[in-house]
Length: 132
Image (cartoon, rainbow, N blue to C red; front, side, top):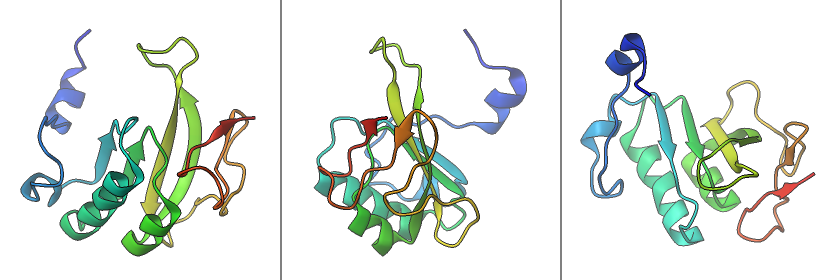
């Protein structure tokens, strides 16, 4: 299915090495990254790169939770953690949405963000979340 014309006009989809390019992020306000298989070190590098390359970033959405230390260093805070439908898994996948530190609506560290998923505690396994 094709996106509506107004969506297509407002969205840019890129397939690139996110850590080797800065220009596309200069104007980005919202970024999604399917980082489901990335190790913690690569997720931390993504957070640092976006912090430096995306000054207008309002929201970052990822499948896998970002490491808590990387969030603090990048000035990001968890806004919500929920489940979404995906084509590769019948039960869905987690979706973590981060905002710049200090924006309204951030979840408390290790706190509950919605009814389906809870944010991982700082002692969790690499920032993964679990079903509630």
